[in-house]
Length: 304
Image (cartoon, rainbow, N blue to C red; front, top):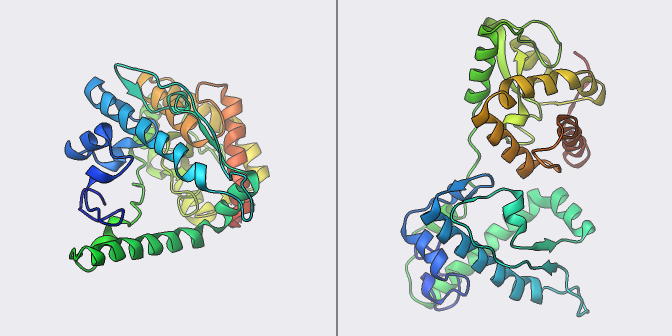
């Protein structure tokens, strides 16, 4: 939005007067950094790391001194959010993993508020987007700044994750060509490449995530006619435990490059350290499965 010149404050249509838009932010803005590049798990070389570290540190400071400081409970001086800041660290190159993000500190959200945001996010998000769009247009009108129809809405549009199973498919093909037997993670039956599908364990329709931990080999008939967009039941998931863990070991952890990516993606999306025991990662995935059933009422797949 800043790059497009849309005003973020009254009498402002650029980064010069924004409190958080200091040297790091402006550098990322001018060198063409795409927001998708700042995802959790991304790795930056020294030059880009310097700008990214500065920009995140500036944003963290602004959050701590402004919204987190002034957001209070109704009729109370008690802050809604608790801020725990850490000392800024220097680095010649960085990986935006959980450990690095924790170096900037923590923003503690009350449990009841977090649960409400998760459950009602489908209604809260459109309201916030509409209100921010209205504010930008109000600022622009005061400045007699023309904003083409649809420009603000396009800038606020959520960028959907890319659905991709290619890496998991290549891993399955590699295993199939070796002396190891490729099997369907849900049925345990031998799986020839002619019947191979790559399934999202937690369905894409409910959890749009193509992280490696969420992808597994599945018989095409089981995937497309039985499981489809449903969440596996506790019984099916427990029965598939050893096959899921075995797939992770053969497909990802046996490959140095994929192993590092697998660990980063686990740490970013599941409540467990990506370098932990695979049994713990399975338990974290099972916890995420249960949350989908409870919070989103996703249909359950109960029989193979």
